[in-house]
Image (cartoon, rainbow, N blue to C red; front, side):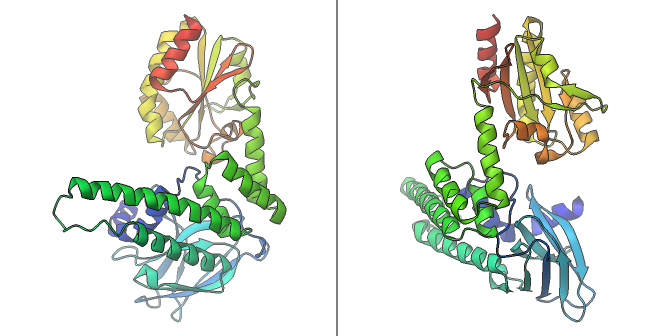
Length: 386
C-alpha cells in the first residue's frame, strides 16, 4: 500500500487529465463494460511497446486507476528493448502502462481492448503514441479536442502566481468553467454517437451516466440500430427495465443473499413482518456510507419498536472488512452480501449505481420512496409510524 501511495504522490500531474475527465463528464458509474464489434473477443489483445529511458530487465505494468491509486493488474519484463502483454478482455477498459514504479514513474493512459497494437511510451505522456489501435486512435482524438475546448474556454484565467484573484477574475473563472462544462458535454455526446460502435464510445457513455432522459434515449436508439448485440447496449436496456420495475409504487423485488456467517437472509421475511422495511445499500469502503450510518443507526433505534426494519445489502468484496465495519459502526440489523462489490446481485436487482442508497417498502410490498437520508428519512418514518 505504501508503494502505491508513494506512486500516486509522484504521479499527480499525470493523473490530472484523467481526473479532469472524471469531473467534467460526471462519472458515477463504476465500470466500463463493452468493446466494439471491430475486434474479436476470441483473439484477445496483444500489446508490444517501448518505454523511454527503460532498459532490458526493467518491469512494465498494466495498472487500473482506482480511487486515485494505480493498482497493478499485470506485469512483464523488457527484453531486447521491448515489452509485450497478451491477454483477453470482455470489455474496453481505461488503463495505464506504468514503468519505473519505485521512482519517477512513467505513465501512459490507454484503452485496453482486444486489438493487436504497439505503444511508444514517453516520459511526457502527451508524446506517447499508438500504432494499430482503433480505440486508442479515437481516445487520442477525443482527448486532444477536449483540451482544445478547455484552452478556448479558460483563456480568461490568467493572474500572477501567488496573487489572490479579484472578484472580477473569480467571476470570469466561474463563467469559463461553466462554458467548458457545457461545451465538453455537448462534444462528448456528439463524439460517442458518431463513433458507435466502439470501446471508446462505451467508456465515454458510462462516464456520462446519468444523462437526461432525452439524450439517453437518443443514444440508445442509435445503439439499437448500429449495435443491438453490443454488451453495453444490452446491459443498459436491462437496467432501464429494472429501473421501471423498482420505481416508487411498484411491488418490491425480493433479495436472497448470505449474512456474514454464510447463512441465507431473505428480504421478504422482513417485509412481511413489519410496517416499513428499508433496504440500505452500503459498503465498508464507502466514505459517504460510513458518514451517513449514524443517522441510520439513530433512526433504527427510534422506530424499530414501531414496526421499522432495515436489511443491509453490502457491496463489499472483503468479508473481514465488512464484519469490522458492522461492529465499528454499531449496525445491529440483518446484513446480506454476495461479496462481489459492484457486481452485487442485490444492487443489480434495484439498479443501484451509487451508494449509499435506500429503498423503503410498506407492509403490502409496495415501494414507498427511494434514497431518503438524514432528516428526510426521519421525517418520512415519523409520518408513517407515528
